[in-house]
Amino acid sequence: MITNEILEEKWRTQKRMAEEAGYNVRKYARNVHRTVEKLVEEHGLKLRYAKRKPLKPVFDKSSAG
Image (cartoon, helix red, strand yellow):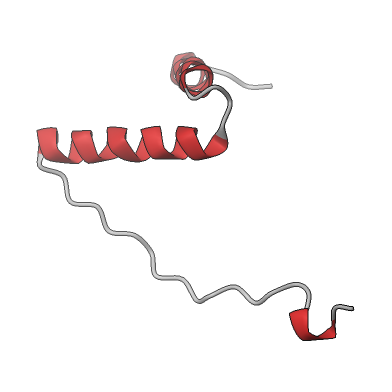
């Protein structure tokens, strides 16, 4: 696998954040969101998210028996 300093720092940070969240994906996402909000405030950033079409369900609930 190709690696470099930036990727290794990314992996260390992700591991630390996962540990801090107790490996709970909801807590992890909440912590990441708070971190991003803090960085936006500190650095005067403006984030724009892509607009996506709603996903279609894989299974039709009405036909489930």
